[in-house]
Length: 390
Ligand code: NAD
Image (cartoon, rainbow, N blue to C red; front, side, top):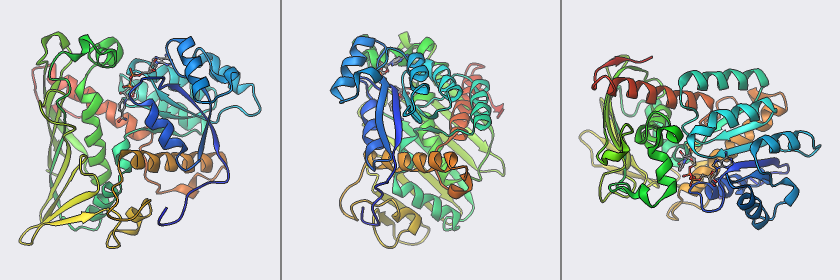
């Protein structure tokens, strides 16, 4: 890396549940976790179909004896080994996250879990208490937060460059599901089925991503009440929504909006964050993640570029290749996995204070994502009314 390599001397023995062959998100977990050699993949229960999971583990070069039919067998067998796994990543459909995370924590294993962490806030809080009681780390893969320019945005707000924050304008609105693609695509089918997806589709699947970015950039903003309206433009998806509009009033008077959508026809990813302060605004778009737009009232627009010396040292610390060469989602995820590893190692060494201030989406982020979805659904299902944030 341009600011010092990160290759570690020790690796965390690591397993995966889900993320099997052909899954959408398994590959980026493996790529990000092993990029700086902090995690070494040694075990897996990769697939709902045990034979397919075992074959995939063999393809990845794993010891066949450590490719398990289920996560239950994996956690039991790995606990019995002197060289058993210290950490596991969970990349399965939403309905399984609570049970698998709970089982991992009970087996004494650190966790990286996909979002949404659980179906209900009560379940998420239960996992938070369990992780605290066992002294274990739970990371949640809000992967976009690993982009350098998100760190830079957070620094600019913290330094007061924007002035008092007035508006938070968020969207994650893609167009890939503008038709009933789930008829032919199993990975979309479970997302629109409440048994597997939970109480929402786009709110939990994508809306929570920019929401978490706003929590990183503006950590002082606390939602006071919100109003959400949700629609199923593909009628067969009801009661789950493929589009939702959320208004949020924060303590202190700032105001926010979140557009979550899978039917924004023609849009690729459409994840954007715009923060408006009393003096200046900033804007970031995940399709051009190396740039951050800073607009100071009365001055020409500035486009800040990743990897440049004028950025905050904390943003530059993540730089791998220098300005000009594009970095992307794989690097952002690797930055997060690096921090997950530091937190896990510090926890195991009995020195969590060593990583105090380390910024990564932990279990609090998982809890907050689930809480936000729950509040949005409560508002929407009463006909789109203001509800106090609970
Ligand atoms: P997918 O349907 O493409 O793949 C799911 C994988 O999990 C498959 O390999 C399946 O066989 C396996 N699986 C299912 N149940 C299992 C079980 N009980 N034990 C072991 N393996 C099991 O799904 P996906 O799109 O990869 O999504 C997986 C999770 O990742 C979801 O929770 C989704 O919300 C999340 N996700 C997150 C991001 C992100 O940006 N963080 C992006 C996409 C998906």
